[in-house]
Length: 78
Image 1 (tube, rainbow, N blue to C red):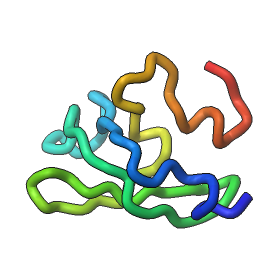
Image 2: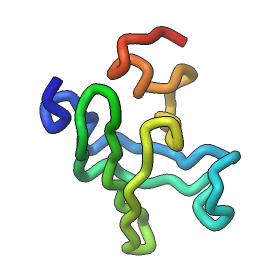
Image 3: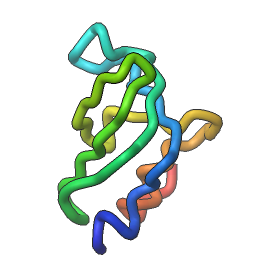
Image 4: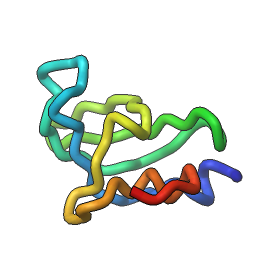
């Protein structure tokens, strides 16, 4: 899998409430890039305040979807 082709660029995501960085919890941002491959992929997320953060797939939830979108990238169903 090529990350740039499979990554949901432009997708709105929310940082999970159990994220280790307290200030990011619940923050909504937009995916603007991705790095890695099938086994390990991180997404470059741009937040409304102008900040950027690299986040693991498991750190994020799709805004507006009941199932985590990244599970489809890993070949899993929720």
